[in-house]
Image (tube, rainbow, N blue to C red; front, side, top):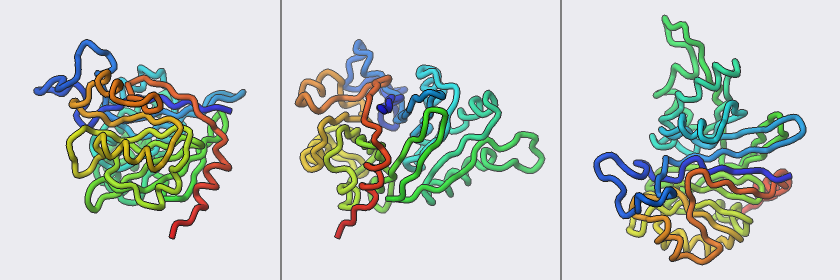
Length: 282
């Protein structure tokens, strides 16, 4: 059964346009140049309903959830603790109050510690407060698959650790035959083994000039040559990269993300995820 991935946001940390500096090199007349911060929604529909999984809570989350008509979530996964991927976390409150149940959130140890420190009130009731916690924290570990259960069936996920600048780890994710790696400066050998030969790869491509913690266009294209996905979608796009200019530079199998883009992918997830997790790299 196919799953659907919706790109809720494909912009870099400031989005496009940015207050003060505007649209950069992006044409404001092109709607696909208006970019919210990075986040995706993964859905699996079944006879009993739909399972919904969110990756990252961007500062634009409220509008992203409204645009995608999301009224319930079965889980949230965090790729890392940077503000552009976490600072919309309080917008989950409306869903919790509506559905009267907490949302499970998954993060690696460093991100979990950071979220608990910055948003403690979401995980336990502060002294003197009447507000109950709304989130339950669960662990994510590199190379250890998890399954998210919901009304539409399970969604299997493989967390994949990558470098996101010096001495900093972020997670990418594999869902069946699709990989999502939004913030990366280096893909280590173990991650390459889990990402090679996919049907779809959604990959960081910040800008054309060098950056210490993100892929440039040239680095993203080099990774595509090495990983050999059938289809690539570039995301985490800075205001330097105009949608149409970038699209016209690329071959047909490499696309430019835009907010609201929907992708159907193979949900033969269980076996694919288990196989990827079992790969050992010397």
